Length: 114
Image (cartoon, rainbow, N blue to C red):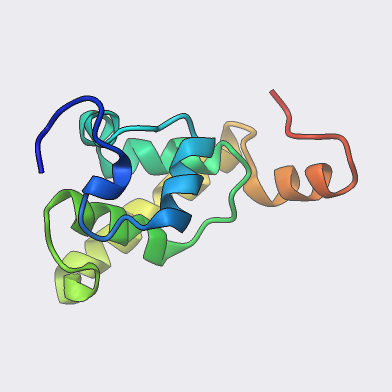
């Protein structure tokens, strides 16, 4: 694997087709872009698409960017990531980026807020 700007996000261990689609909806199309953003900011972008928050997706991004197995996150490290995840969700709701609201609005045909 190279760090070429053309490598797809799936070039990163643990990033499969489904998560690649989620990242693409967030405007993240390359492994280089994902590495530059980092897991936390990439996940913030994912939330802004209206994707429902999911802690496992959050920590899988962290493990993937460290080249670690997705299920290697345990103990104090996992607890610390949970605190950051919960804080990120709260920040986005406070900023008016409530993924649950976005999902509901999109379901009734209003589309995502911009």
